[in-house]
Length: 109
Image (cartoon, rainbow, N blue to C red):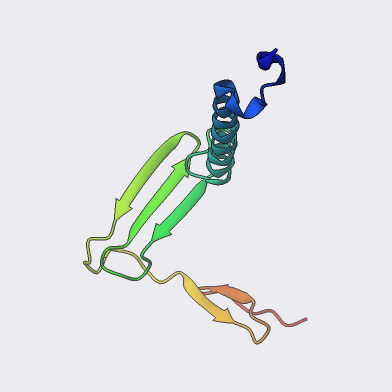
């Protein structure tokens, strides 16, 4: 009759059940972390742009459009190109921006 009164603390299966519970919690935490990361989340339908080390020579930009990931690295060179002035932008006192195209005429009411 000793076996009927034996405590449950001697049962090795209970420690395995506790390990399974710990693994389930770890898996749930990893799934939440993946769901919150916009670059890894396969269910995200929005486009995402991430800039790493902004303003430094080692700056990188990662762009996600749909399922396609593009990675751009800064070369440190100053860019130049051909073009012409298209207008002027002004920042107003309230923080808004106003763009005035080149050659636009102002008509008075």
